[in-house]
Amino acid sequence: MSFDYDLFVIGAGSGGIAAARRAASHGARVAIAERDSLGGTCVNRGCVPKKLFVYASRFAEQFQLAQDYGWSVEAGEFDWPRFIAAKDQEIGRLNQVYQRLLEDSGVTLLRGLAQFCDRHTLEVDGQTVTAEKILIAVGGRPRRPEIPGIEHAWVSDDIFHVPQQPRRIAIIGGGYIGVEFAGILQGLGSQVSLVVRDRLVLNHFDQDIREHVQLSMASQGVEIHTDTEAKAIERHDRGLTVWLTGDEPQSLEVDGVLVATGRVAHLGPLRLEAAGVTVERGAIAVDAYSRTSQANIFAVGDCTNRRNLTPVAIAEGRAFADTEFNQQPHHVSYHCIPSAVFSHPEAATVGLTEAEARAKIGDAVRCYRSQFRPLLHTLGHTTQVLLKLVVDGQTDKVLGAHMVGEAAAEIIQSLAVALRLGATRSDLNQTIGIHPSTGEEFFSMH
Ligand SMILES: Cc1cc2nc3c(=O)[nH]c(=O)nc-3n(C[C@H](O)[C@H](O)[C@H](O)COP(=O)(O)OP(=O)(O)OC[C@H]3O[C@@H](n4cnc5c(N)ncnc54)[C@H](O)[C@@H]3O)c2cc1C
Image 1 (cartoon, helix red, strand yellow):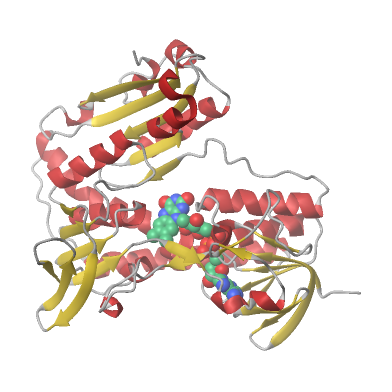
Image 2 (cartoon, helix red, strand yellow):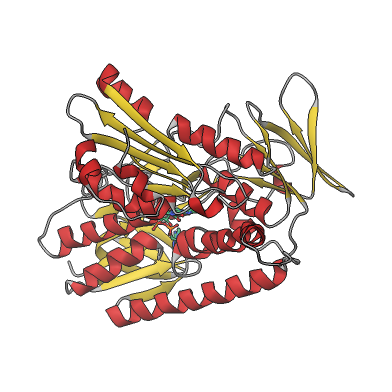
């Protein structure tokens, strides 16, 4: 049987574009469908615009620091609409870049929603196409909790386009997206209330990191409601009221509500049942090589709910293309994937948390911590950084490295190489650091 394409990719986000371009470079005839803007979540409503917001919000601290260093500066006013317009212009430029990259790779782009007819046939906005192999890379979407008035709340997709800065905002959810936006909006001058279901923000991170981030946020003025959930949202002519759980009737009066209570795979419109692809716990079930329950259908990225990060989706997409179109079978290793939270201050992590290490090797775990005021902040403004190593006391192997403080993402990113290669604490201690820097502390922890 002959097909229109060797590979049809559904979704032109991080994983889909990476896979399509790599497969085309191996000589495959490739098409990709996208229902929205090219680049997916990361480029349009995730990593990139989020980091631009983070940069915008950090100027408040820079103005304060400048004064500590003898400059006479006034913070001035933040112009939200001007920033949103500049950010949109940059995202528009990136959309064009992705279009050019696909064209230059010889990948055919079909605009529209792709839906399965059978396991080799898809319909894209009324057009029928067939392909020998199909890759599902449809990503995820924000989950909205089922509480009365939830239609009045924004999700992360919306916050990037809100026309006016909310003066008072309630953020529901203490995961990385909630924590990042709490820092962003607080830095931009909004009054932020963060509603967290647990005792601490950033579930799954190391306990010391969670405590340090939470204390730092509180000391900067974010009002944190722990062990609390939102039970209803009400709109009235003065704004919104968020009703909270708890023994006492408690509510927040705000101008906007952002719900950041997790994400789910975006499978609804795909008509997966027509292709017989198995879904488990809301995500597409795949093996290490991203193979689904159907031999010719594969899935990568957030829709498989493995590690929901852009570099992981890209690596999975490329590994799939090399395996299927270049007789070079390989798959992604999920060992020691670093990640960051672009909070205020920034947090980053690689490897095992102390709790995970204890669950694995018990009392053999040794932890080394260093908490200090970084040189940049010694002239007045006070903020502390925290560095932590989790070590196997029997082998001296470093199992985890965690940090809160400026440039944490950049520092932990490099340490990830050492952890992947099995570095011991003695290896780190024999490494000469760069002085004066914050990262050098990782090389002298006793
Ligand atoms: C607010 C936020 C901040 C984030 N920050 C970071 C960060 O700092 N670092 C990081 O590594 N990750 C971050 N992420 C996660 C990152 O964005 C995702 O892990 C990544 O985008 C996943 O890529 P993907 O290819 O799986 O899916 P996506 O990038 O979501 O791409 C899927 C694409 O498929 C399209 N699509 C869906 N269904 C169909 C269909 N039926 N037909 C046609 N097209 C379809 C969608 O429109 C979309 O363009 C963030 C996410 C969010 C929401």
